[in-house]
Image 1: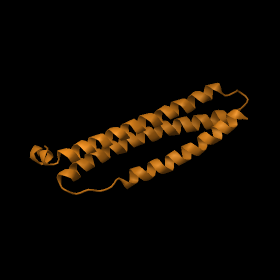
Image 2: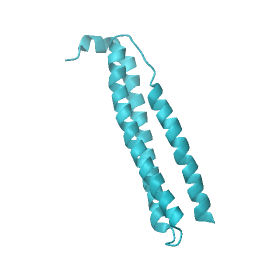
Image 3: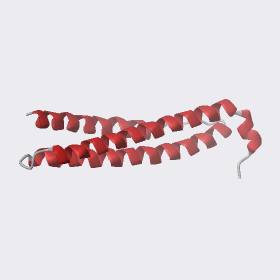
Image 4: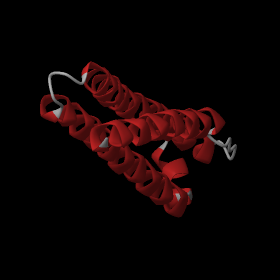
Length: 120
């Protein structure tokens, strides 16, 4: 059970934590949308361009998986910050930031390759 008196002492921090969580939710939904967009290119690629079809499938699937992972880690991070705020102990979400940075870099490079293939 939560100590509501402790929550009320740190109202601004809890509200900021909720806003941050909602920003992560919007980010994950956007990445999932990019995955669906990339997967839609699978159906637009010509049947003779097997590599574009394969690359669009990988990018689409990878983006959806990344979006779900971000949502899961953001939810975990929200609850960890909630505990940390009440106990006056803060830890920065390093794992989440690095996961997003590396994954979006890979997906971005694959999307650039896919666009290049689709235009040629």
